Image 1 (cartoon, one colour):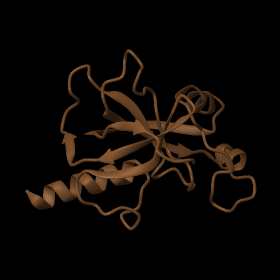
Image 2 (cartoon, rainbow, N blue to C red):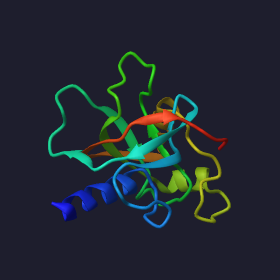
Image 3 (tube, rainbow, N blue to C red):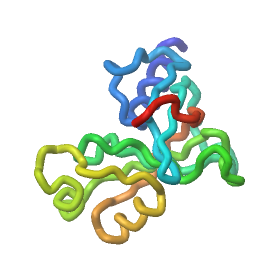
Image 4 (spheres, rainbow, N blue to C red):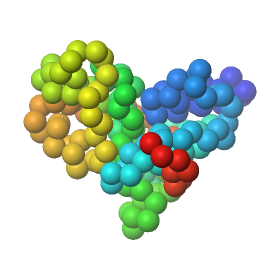
Length: 153
């Protein structure tokens, strides 16, 4: 059971694009500047809660860039605290990868880091339409709350 909790925590860290070296992988670890939503950055608390099937009608999409091909882009959520449709930090993970056109647009200097971050779901979907991104459902569901950011980005 302890191994399972550790694995779930590690998967949540990966989805959020956080290295285990940055955060102690124990449950209930606060991570600052982790998730973008509506052009605001949020902190989160990594928990050991995941679901094998989505909780019926009670998840929001979180776009993860962990396998995107570039570093520096944090996860983007479609909803946030205060939104009427926000489901409290229960996430349906969608994995985002940059296309060759996206690599050229988001990393024109070729250093492997995004030159600008996408900070809301609408812009992310626009960049998908532009052919910069490919979005795939991961069939992984987990819970981590979004908290007001305590610091400056």
